[in-house]
Image (tube, rainbow, N blue to C red):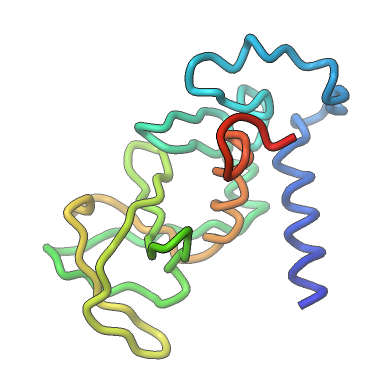
Length: 158
């Protein structure tokens, strides 16, 4: 458990730090830059999360994908879909997966039809052939998403 917490802390630091720069203090960033969607100043060119949109999701840099070990599996056929159990994300009172479409990861709710120790059979109207599902690194994607949009609450994560 301690090893997991240390890993999450290190990933959080990586996601916050611009690539090749030291992050300015919290007081120095400009809140006006966040726009109407309240996107974190930790999103942008040269950072782990390069783009964020509530509609599209988050886009990670190639370096972030490698460092975080994110692996995407393409969706084949039509619903219901079978995926690895490790791809599930538990959030609020829901269960979802990170859909990969057009370079963006979006957390979408799913309905589980069957569950074994290693696989899940699920349905979702938001998945279609050609989409991908993140099957490894989903915890890191969740941290990146929360950081990009300012945490779990409205507004900032600070």
